[in-house]
Image 1 (cartoon, rainbow, N blue to C red):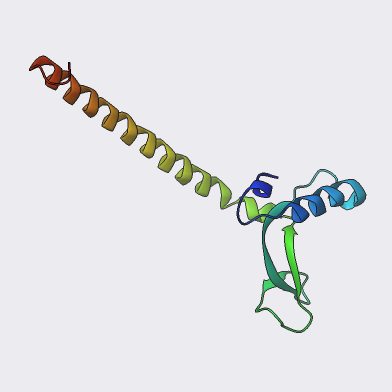
Image 2: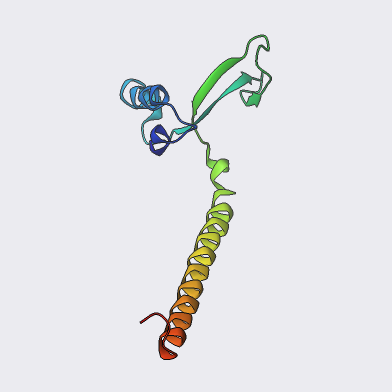
Length: 113
């Protein structure tokens, strides 16, 4: 539901997902992902394939049900993303420390009083 406020997500897609949770009993205990609208086509095997707009038999969807195997790569992605966030925060901390040290040194020699 976080994408409703983002540039990629649309409120109508969030409402569609909420409606599916309420009206469709087959999503009980499952998850729905809301993303940007994409043109997809369902193959004979039941899997969905990303296709070009205007492809015969395709539909434009923004709400998808993730399957169990979709979560296998999620742990590695989350770990890398958290590492990235931690690195950014550590960098901000070191920049703040350097600024404080520079200000203290300038204050000691009479600049910045």
